[in-house]
Amino acid sequence: MGKRIYLCLAHMSGAEQAFIQEAFDTNWVVPLGPNVNGFEEDLKNFVGEGKEVVALSAGTAAVHLALIACGVGPGDEVIVQSFTFCASSHPIKYLGAIPVFVDSEEDSWNMDPALLEEAIKDRIAKTGRKPKAIIPVALYGMPYRIDEIMRIAERYDIPVIEDAAEGFGSRFDGRVLGTFGRFGVLSFNGNKMITTSGGGALICPDAAAKTEIMFYATQAREAYPYYQHERIGYNYRMSNICAGIGRGQMTVAADHIAHHKHVCALYRELLAGVDGIILHENPSERYDSNYWLNTVVLDPGLHVKGEEHAYEAAVQGAVGGAAGVTHAAGTLHTDCEPNRNVEAMRIALDAAGIESRPLWKPMHKQPVYRDAPAYVNGVSERLFRTGLCLPSGPCVTDDDVRHIVASIKDAILD
Ligand SMILES: *Cc1c(COP(=O)(O)O)cnc(C)c1O
Image (tube, rainbow, N blue to C red):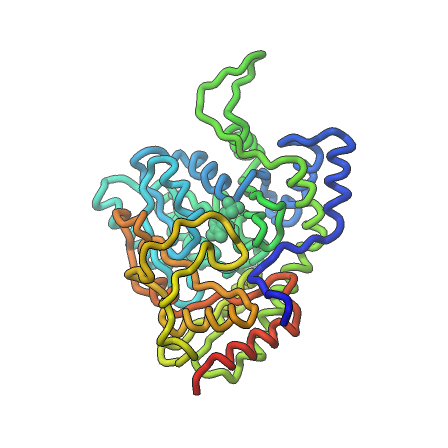
């Protein structure tokens, strides 16, 4: 195979260039303008439920501004799903607040509602104060138990910020994720369901909330003829050029989601007879994952070629196509890492031209969050030790999936 198969590469519809050209032609090369308004309108129609949407420079910015809008400040506690990408929890630290990590349940792999309630009660008992917000995460696109999470959140009157960055277009009981809680976070990074090259959005309950978010996203300026500041603001608005890409992407959003689901169905069919490898799927009819990334778990008893040599060589830079700058690893091991058979499978797939990646390492196992309170049940740690993400994006063809599954079977020792 000459080409490399990536987890989820951006895929242009062809409509993007016209929107960008228009921005140049009309001299709207700034962080506001017709494409920003048009993209927000498209997103508003897509998510429905009478919500408003603000386009921002990143999903991380959307998390940050949602926390500010929920009144989070220094010393406050925010409950967040531990099994997530760091963008769900880092903004809590930006505000000098304290993340309280809650583990996952087996079915959705997302926030365990029973553990959530236990955490709320225990935080109130220990600190005398309620957590300021609850952040469940649609990991790999899979919906969280939002019915139960909302019931608990309402019982304690704590706002929910849905992190649907990976769950664009996923649904629970037929309703789009990001529309259940007070706020919903979307991401349009290069590897997400749709992209603006980099960007995000915050789903807001109403026009007043949207206006407040836009105020903070544009440096919090008061209405005077000169710059007057009474709050600290941020430069988080999406540019009109990026929004042009977003408008083009919205023309193929439904196709992308359908493609990811099609890839899942093909993995299901081809992996059906493979012992020791389980595909993560909707636990019931109520869940409708976009299958942003298809994921599998490997039975610890499954033996993979070369597993005795796993972790002998240090990884150079960031794993996979997503580049970025990383610190060189000081050691070959950490105290919590994927099993040897998982690492051996990743290396075998890599050699076959296939990008795969371990599941996200739970935040309560990250050294930087060593001191954060955590309510755990072992689920996310077990998933991290046994799981792998497989290529799922719009550039992944049926032949690619066949090649991937054949390569997985090749790597298994029988
Ligand atoms: C990608 C992502 C975000 C936000 O990402 P940006 O790259 O800042 O757009 C937030 N949460 C999760 C779970 C994500 O995967």
